[in-house]
Length: 121
Image (cartoon, rainbow, N blue to C red; front, top):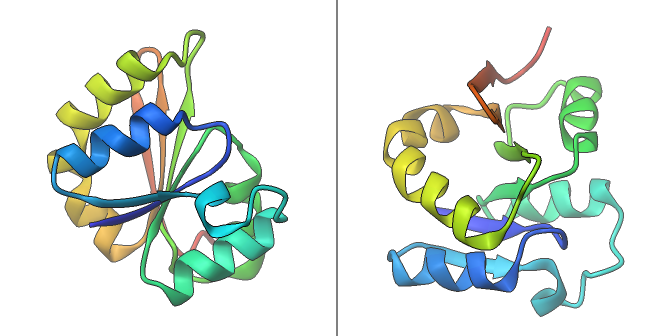
């Protein structure tokens, strides 16, 4: 799996994903630290990557576009500290891989994980 991390995602999480054997890059490593969400979506779709973010706007943009990719994981946590996010990713990525590959918006909250398949109707 290949991941594009939005700017609110810690560089430590990107490094952790790489240590786990995934391909991961943070937007600033591409010179896209000030890119609009639409640009990140386009890049991720073209490069067959999944976006990891804390920004709910990606879901709305995917809804409006009617596309099936890229899949997005959005964290909605009170304490989004890197070690906590990393622990959640370690546990959840193997379980969510199929949904990500099909096309989904996955929201990880304190008490639950919501999966909405793309395209959203």
